[in-house]
Image (tube, rainbow, N blue to C red; front, top):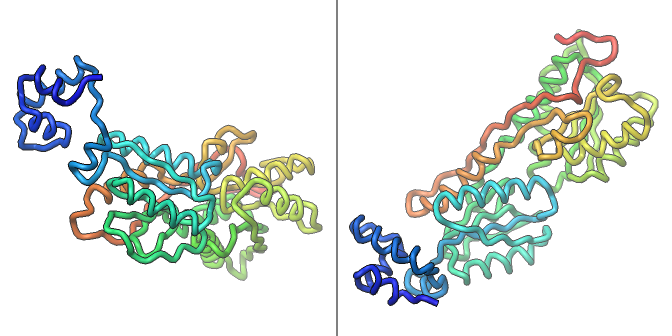
Length: 331
């Protein structure tokens, strides 16, 4: 296996010059840098990351902690982070907290011990962590301690869904929220309810019923079955996540309720499955790429003044699960 000395000998430079090239030190002139890189390629040399960490006090790795890798939203988010890190010559060390605050705390400590450049945390329920490490940390989607948060504008996105349903002519609507112990669920519910209240008038009243579940398929199916089996069936169900909405679609199929002929269903997130189910789901697309770019940039710009929270707008994606209610005309 070639060593750094072999690279230096082949390139005709000092070991120190090779080390500076590996550390991406700008003081190395371009001709020398190219000679070193060519020698590394010809020798098939791979730097020892552990040794490099000892020299630079860090490695070209970002830490990412998410609550549940089986959740398609978090999987897509992780992919975006990995792609953005790769553009900057970094890899990602992924940890799955299983939505356990204690496991999350252990993982933060472990990543710090591994000399990562910084950590992006999609927090668990009830994370109450104060600054305890000298390392850049960014909250993503859910707030981690008092670290700045990068997230979709959940309030605004839910308002867009409410506007869409109202414009189609729906006046009998059910909303399925996520667990109210989560800030994200609270914001999405508040955005939807606030917009419906603004659209509701004595001359054109809206009947809204509220339900609470979890951000998963089974919860959507169970609540959807309960709503659709009732005596006063709504013409539209707005779900606080795509997984909830897909569960509702499953219950509608089982009860032989036609979507969108008899029932409109909407979601939130635009996970990959949203465009694959039949009928394809109308939803709010979370800006995965923009979220990843912002979170990663903050780790690389950590020496500058720390920015505040950032809310990024999501887009309404109209597909096949939304239509005017039976006998109504779109406005």
